[in-house]
Image 1 (cartoon, rainbow over the protein chains, first blue to last red):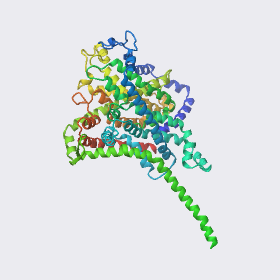
Image 2 (cartoon, rainbow over the protein chains, first blue to last red):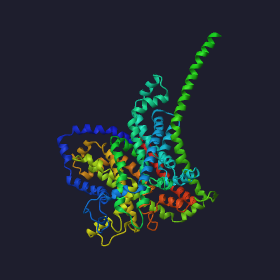
Image 3 (tube, rainbow over the protein chains, first blue to last red):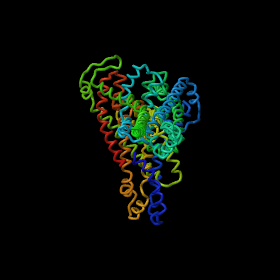
Image 4 (cartoon, chains in turn brown, purple):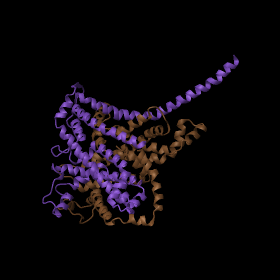
Length: 302
Length: 309
């Protein structure tokens, strides 16, 4: 973690060196084989983007073109019938509603819980701080399939199977390490003087946190919330097992609706897949400004 | 008399104020930490310990009650194809760690060069990582499809294969197919991490090495690698830990098949608990799994502690 945060600090110093380059040295470095660069870029680009192309193209390929062999890399005509078919499947809207409800509540709860924890880790020194931080960090390294076994039994006993609660409780907990770390990083950048100043002005610790610190950390709260949202949106294993048919979210819902051993409706599934991916990509575009934060937080991602 | 009382009176409120202030700060910190800690204990620590404890009981998901059986479950699991399960898990884990590392490193080096459109490409190459895991599984299932799959189509038109291959249903190809699908999903993360690390390589070192006549490959090992080795180690370790417990891609793409050759700890524990309803053996598998994972987590903690110094 620390190594990565220091990267961002060190980065500007390299730019100073750039200006000191002597012309001869610059030429020496420039004499790199550009063709190697372009070849590598094309090969890697094909690996990365051909599947994306296939996802998009299949979703607009007419049925008769999709189920021919060898497959047509370019469809004879472009059709949006598969998207229409997805929108005419009532079950999809139920899954969509469940996904939105679960992910949104997860995001709100996760931020609400992790902001307090991140603040405590950032601005206070207390006994057991380090141990607790390591506990938070390592909690996401435990195998979730194993946790799921007991959680299923516990939620069954509590009558929470097939409810939003079981998913929201699980997802909120699993996003904590990432969100706590992100928010701790944000609070670290705020000067301690702010707290002192608020104290001198007579504000209690809660007031200081809620009306002085939190407004300044708003971008961090949004970023953490979006990450938590995406975690809930993308989850498959817990949603598949705990949610039951009625509260199922989109990922297991799509498997149930489209994937079958006999005949999978590929073009329709690709259309639905693309639609499911859009909110995630949109969230990330919104997050791009915090990409550096995302990278460092990525090191603790589960 | 009067002076001492006054003195005491003046002193007493002061010291109790300090103590009260300290007490209220302790209470404040405890309250800050309470909800998060409660969730982690209730949803991670307790389930983990209870799952592990069930290793020592004959316990079913269908009926209540548990009977103590000692180490019998662990012995059963160890004797029932544990070596295969471990080696299959390791094959997937190592493959799905190395492939994205190589692709991500190559891409980071390419995108670290100055050229037009480099900024845009840095963003575009993130797409495979942004796509939800299940969609990644669907997409590769379709690409690997035996009847209409595009991979078979392209390979046959290039005359690399004569007949279509059922990539996901063939014991020779299923593991490789899984590794490719998972790698496609995770290489952008490696790329982002290594690109950040590459920013720390001082430009003048490259210049000096180039003036001394070192070629690009030589310069990579002599100049670049020492600067990014720390982050690279962290990336490999984390990828390894995550892949060691990866579930989604395997479950959707092959479901552990064909003939159980792609089962890993994650899918085996899941199947034992939710398809075999056998919590005892699932717990025993989990116990062995956790033991191995714990070694990795200790390494990770050591690693990040070292980085902090």
